[in-house]
Amino acid sequence: MINVLLIILGAKLGYSLIRHYITKPNYIKKNLKKYFTSDNVKVVSLPDELYETIDESKVKDNEVYIKTFEDFGKIIEGIIPREDLDNYYRNFSTLKEKSLSFSDQIKIRATYGGFAGGAYNTLENEVDLKTSVLGDLSGSTNHELLHASSTNYDKENNIIYSGFSQTFIKDTDGKKTLETFGLGINEGYTQYLNIKLFGSNSFLKEKIYEDDQKIAKLLNIIVGEEKMQSYYFRADLKGLVEELEKYNTKEEVYKFINTTDILHTFGKYKNKRISELSEAKQYVQAFLFKSLLKSGKMTAEDLSRLCINGDVPYGLEPMNLDKNSSNTTSQNDESENEEKVHKSM
Image (cartoon, rainbow, N blue to C red):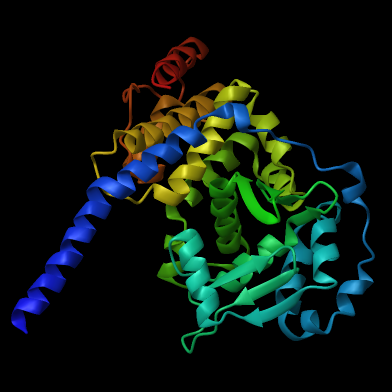
């Protein structure tokens, strides 16, 4: 009996070692190469006809809204400008809810590599929520409702516009496949807004998409809070791309978004043998630092302070920055510092 147990444990250990050091690293490297190819990335504008003005009264006719979502709606309608709420009014007028079953959780784990407290099903316009006796410690309900408030499905072209992400639905021989661009930034900004609008009532809420949140906060500084918020609720990823193109080439912007997507999935993986992951993290930092310097929103000293305070994603250290530069850095000095960052990209 003991021998059998040892064989089973040995087999499991062997499988874990193979998965950790061979199978998963190869999978990650393959995906990094795929995601780093900017040729297959296209950012399309949300068609004008999808920006139609919605009858606000229809939301109040939705019984599910009155029962479950009204408190969320009052905060959103009280803070977000009306011109940015067409997606919210359209979706909430027919929004449905259901409880996540165990099989739903298994499907989410198989798809995304972890369990979730909720999900927004765009095609069904349905918020799927996991119930818990401890309550919604992670803030997943409001997180998913923010997705519902910022999503628009273009049925004719099979594109889902959601906040800062776009999902292209392809039908090949009757089998649907999804390709999403901007997932990492979208999840990070959604959770950032979740905390900003509804408060942080638990440690879990702060830790969800922690690195993605840090990226979103720095983008918020670069672009400006009002613009970022407007782009998000209008599902205008192209608007964000154009803002970032003020300080970077189009290819650099696409690579940045692609890189945040792959790190959203694999960024927590600890195998140091995958040098591509370290390079990806450094690229994200260099892109953000370069943009912050070129936009004039921060100095080199400010960037060093971000690193010291732990406000930089992935816990990276300051790189190629003059720690002794003052807040009154001259324009020439800022240009020089920006060039140092640019060389690391």
